[in-house]
Structure formats: C-alpha cells, structure tokens
Image 1 (cartoon, one colour):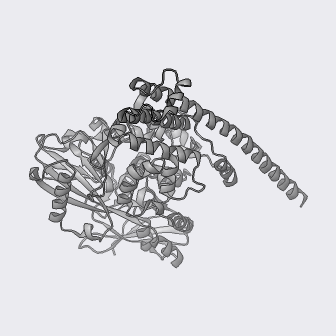
Image 2: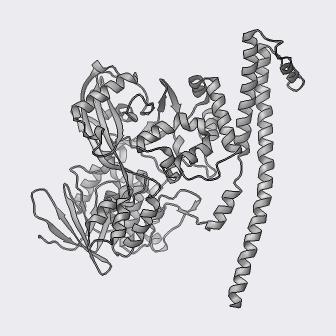
Image 3: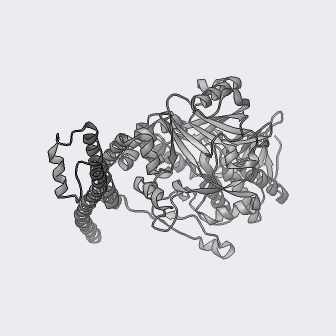
Length: 611
C-alpha cells in the first residue's frame, strides 16, 4: 500500500462534500475529496449529450439561509440566473396549475368533483384521524381523502414504489408541512403567501435561482476553486475501508481503477457516502446488530431519459408532474425553460423524462435504446411531443437517489447513530450520509457545520434539517470570526407536553369556514341550476323558502347566483363560529390538563426532596 501524510478526508463530491471542503478552505485547512464517480455534483450534477445539458431531476436554487446564498455567489457570481417557476400536474388527460389556482382546478375537475373535494376536506377538519403515522394519514388529515387520491397518491407511489400507507409521515412533514390547502387558495386569489414570520411558503415560491449551465456548473467550479487552494478532488476513487482504533478514525484506504490500494492517514473523515455503504467499509466492522440495522435502510433509484425534440417550444412549464397510471414516467423536465443555455440549438427542445425505479428491476435493466423508445411513446401518449419529432436521446441511471422513509428507518438510524457516536473524527453529512431527504441547501449546511466542528465548534449536524418551531442559535466560539447567520435549530418540547398539544389541536376557523362556505354556496347553486334545467321550479317548493333567509333568492338564474354568494357567506360564518367555539372549549380543557400535569410535576419534586 502507498502512504500519504495526514489530511482531512471528505468522502463524496456532491453538494455536502464539496461545501465542506470549501468551508475548510475558508478556515485555512486543506482536504482531499474522494469521489467514486467520474463527475462531481452527485445527484446535483449536469449531464451532457451532443451539447444538450440536463439535470438528474431539476434542482431549484432556493434557500432561506443567507450563508448558503452567499456560498452560491462566491462560487458562481453573475452566472446565477433568476428564473420564473411554472409547473403543472397532469391528471386524467388534463393539466392543472401547481400551486393550486381555484378557477383552473374547478374548470378541470368540474363542479361535482369540486364539491366532493370540499366535502372530503370538511370531513377531515371536523373529524381528523386519531393517529397520523403514514404519509397517507398526514395528507388526508390536511387536505381530505379525495384530494389525496387525485393529486398525491399516484405520483407519490410512483416515486417511492410502495403504498402511501407504508410511507412514514416524517417524509410529508419535512417536504410539504407548510403547504396548506386554504393558504394555496388564498395565494391564488390575493398573491404571495407568507408565514407568520413573513417568509414565503417554500412550496409556493414563484421564482428561483439557477446556474446558467445547470447545477453541475456550480460544483465543477467549486472543484476548480478547491484545486487552486490546494485541496485535491480524486475522481473514480473507491473507498475500500475507513479504519478506526480506540474510538478514533485513523485512516482511509482507497483505490483507483488499475491502481493498488493506498492509505490516507487521517483523524478526520467527513462522509457523504450512503450510511449502509459506510458501515460495510468500517474496519474493524460494527457489531452484527448495527450492520443489520444498516441493511434495513432502503433507497429509491432513479433514471432519466433525455430526449432531443425538433420543436422550439413544446410547453412553458419548467416541469410537469405525471399523476397518471397510463404511463410509467413520473415527472417531465423541460430544461430549456430552466435556462436557455442548456440547449445549444434554440430550434430544438431537451426534455428529461424521470422514472423512479429500483436498481436491478425490469425498467432499470432495459437497454438504453428501449428506454428511449419508451420515453418517446409516453411523450406522445401525454400529448407533449410527436414521436417523429424525437431526433436523439440518452439515458442516465442514478442509484440511491432518494433515502426511503419507511416504517423502520427511524429505529434503524437511531441504532446506527448511537454506535457511530463512539468513533471520534467521523462526521456524517449530506442526503445519503445522513439517510435524510435533505434539500440541497440543508445538505450544504451539514458540510459547513462539519467543517467548523473540525476547528473547534460544536454544532449538531443532525439538527440542520429540522424545520418545525425553531429559533436561531449562534456558536459563541465562532461569532467573532465569521458572524455568519446559522441555520435555525428546533425548540425541543417535552414529549408529554407535545402530546397534550396534539390532543387539543385547534381547528382553523378560516379553513373550516371557507370549506363550509364553499360547500353551502356551490350546493345551493347547483341545486337551483338542476331545477331550472329540468324545468321543475315547483317540484321542490321548499327550496324557495330559503328566500326568507337569503335576500333576493328564488328558483331563477338570478337566484342561483344570489344563492352562491349568500350561501357561501352564511356557510363561512357558520363554520367560523363552530371552529371558534370548539377552539375555546379546547383551550379551556388544555389549560386544565396542563395545570394537572404541572401539579403532578411539583408533587414529583416534593417527593424527590423528601427522599
């Protein structure tokens, strides 16, 4: 084996690994980055086929973290473009705007389906599920079962390859926790939505930043900057083992194709390789129970079929979600709409058809030409492009693209982390390194935290992706030198207190009022219209009695409009009042429960003193 001097080793040249090396360079420390592939960027790379560039999935550059935005500017400067977001959902042969626009959804689904969605939403608000364990539970409890079945179920099951009832609610709480049906409706009617802190809801942003030549441009430039500083990025380099002794990392054994293995002596390793792979590489090996826990961690793999189409303008969307069982494709990217410079010939368009697969399954194993033929057929089926306009194509397979949040991952990860905490100098960063479905900015901040920990800080890297109630924490050791705004950390709530608050969860008066208002107004409108179309003005005389309560209402065309407006208002007031009264009762009961809990806590303190 060859030998080398002690260095900081970064495993993986994706956003987390390269950001860690970049931060280390700012702290005056060199590193060596080991990348198994022949291209940097991980899943955030940009691939090229005959001059046409395409992502492995689209990568929006949007963040609430100022320091991440600063890094992007340091690396690319004016090469970062501001791009408008436009995405739609394909369902039942129709395209729906996303984020939701009520008129577009109503016209697409029809008034009957709109009423069904509203009733389903109303039911979920009035009688929520007693236990929210799965992705299905989480979405149904917030949007209603009918909306879940139309706009969440098919696509999500394509992505993850399992029923929504088997996917952990943790995934939903991270990815779409801030998106609310009524918030989306208000956004469509009155403009941008803000949270209580004045921040735009992430799922509803209307524009984002994007590198001129795709996300790979960011990480290729970062690699070059590191090289200028003296940090090496070693491509096509496989990590054979991570050595440790007496609770401390001691070295990494690596190998390049056709070359002998060599040892890099180090006491600091930042690993963004998949947790399961890392544990297999540890020398000495972990206990069997830990290895079994690692084997229970699952991944979803991904392949992109890139098609070059002889049409200058196919559609204006950046991407389209495919909620349809008639095709296997899950999402379609139009890279020309991400950046015009992704396409060398402006008379052509480059589409990326994304398939969510398992490594080794039938779709993954198909020859490239058959996958290109499949993508061509499905483009035509969806009405996006004619098959005879496809003039070329390429396929890229990406294993372990998405960590899976199934029913056992949390328990397995807890056991793994508990054992790995015993090894000093080993920090896990990034999406696969932590087996967490991180956004790019979250992955980058794990790299920043890990780099700073090497020079004496004490950040908890695992807190980076927590986005519930949080406050900002600063590391007093690092404030004087950097002054950087750090990622907020979660405010911990005692489990029993959290359970009490969940037990007495409030009903949103605006949500309930809006749902009941929509149901009341639309139902009265449709009932009146049906009577008019059937010429049955006298078949249901009791409905005319509503004119005693709704000024101007009658079984007439004018009356149907009056019923829609005044019925909606009356339903809103009734729903708002019901929710407000219920919340008042809940608040009183919650206070009584907390008082009893606090009294019990005081009794425990007295008993402890007496003992």
